[in-house]
Image (cartoon, rainbow, N blue to C red; front, side, top):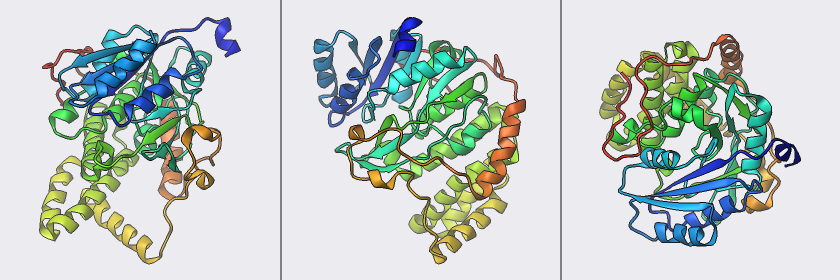
Length: 381
């Protein structure tokens, strides 16, 4: 903290969108108010909850003047995040979902990284550990150290993979119009954070803080637990970003969408039969021309892996499984080492990133952050 004190402490606005989160929001807010970084503004946006979410948040507000609670009619996670951003004033925005938790040094580490990296860097991120209802570790996610220009590598590797693992400059969040809600309009919520990160990456650099500072909770019934919706949302996000940003129209980007299409195809076969799955695959072909080639190849590869009994990707820190997230060293975990297609395309995407010039203004109209219900952010055409 000494290096931060010498340069003053910029205000960080923590934005907590919350809906029906009474079972988890207490742990979330406890981890936020326990941050070692003191200059925080904590804005909880209750998105029309019918349980005790707002009441629990109000308890924290009564005990800590940094906490503010805003209640609004239900409008979705993106609208709630934008409401919090619009009501806050920090130089940096740090979102956290109401079922996740942070390591105490999370905000401090991100602010230090952003301050040290320079003004061209707008977003700091960290890997996460998947946790259960009792904050115990299920497994650790990949640990990346990808910094600088990452616009081509981000959709492929999805280094952040959640809405609680990054801190962004307010200026950058406002530049891209905040979090878009067109996925909600299509009943495909779940990847608004990835689309937001892609939009920021088209204009600014990222910096990695490669410590496990985020506990990402997996609970039954959550959006992230609904595999079909998440896979469809991810593929749709890739499609819209591909349409909006011509620089992303490269072979690896299109291939990066195919595993989600293949997962949907396999799920449709099990639930609806081969005929329905093939009809749905034809619809995806209109969005991703590689589908007729990639789908059978990926299906064969998946079948071969099962027959050959190839183990899934190893946990970077298997010794931590079952331990309490807040009790373990966030630095423990092996680095991600790409293999196969990831190694092949990773180098190519890195070269594309090295030659990419960040855009100060993307094609098409920008949408200002709008906290009011009723303002729609349609999918960019």
